[in-house]
Length: 144
Image (cartoon, rainbow, N blue to C red; front, side, top):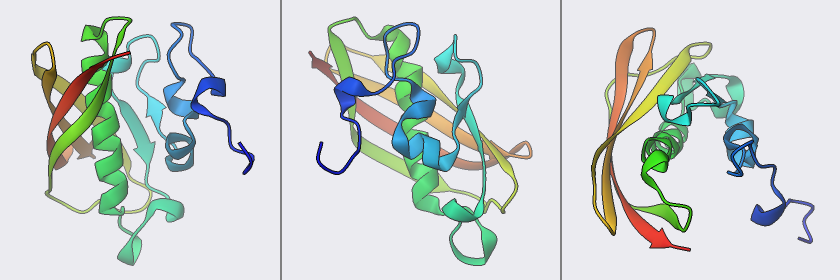
């Protein structure tokens, strides 16, 4: 690529041959860390820092939306065959409370139902044990 960024095919892979979740450029910028790299479906965390804050030292809602979508994929991932992938085609996100700078956000998704072509996933974000956002995400299952 001409801008110095790596293409999807040259990004680091984890020990299972999947793109390294923490090394994806956006996740790296946000500071996302998997709870357990061996069990990605357990979700992830990140600490709110000035680079991802909106007004008055609070987490930008768009950043939270991005990571909720990503954690939904992690919840779906164990059900995907080697020749399948998934993309989001519908997201409904409710921001319930603000998250301040320095707080750690914990995110986890749960696969609700999986069909041949569509999957439904719920995701949530918590800070200091408080529920701060929920999401309902529909993913289309693609054949590679």
